[in-house]
Image (cartoon, rainbow, N blue to C red; front, side, top):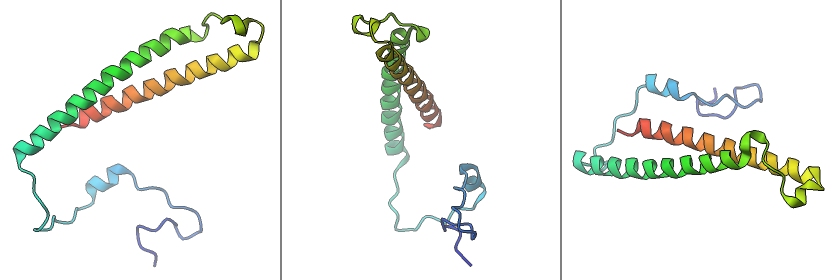
Length: 119
């Protein structure tokens, strides 16, 4: 019988990755006695630093998102001089600007999620 950590489900196809919600219902192995412990004050300090870094990253990412949205101009930015004669260059730039907006939106969402998870 294959072990539960196998990358196959027995029919030659990759097994689905375990969901994170199933790990919360699975009992965890006890921490070994020799495992180093972090005192609560040290952990609180680390969490504070992490929160500060994430907050700074979020502010930076929100600024970049605002700039990207402004440049994208709802999909209709004015054509640059070299793009007036070449519509394909214009389409490529619009696609690049839209991708930039999407990336920054995802980054903002991920950072907010991380911040919510910080103790």
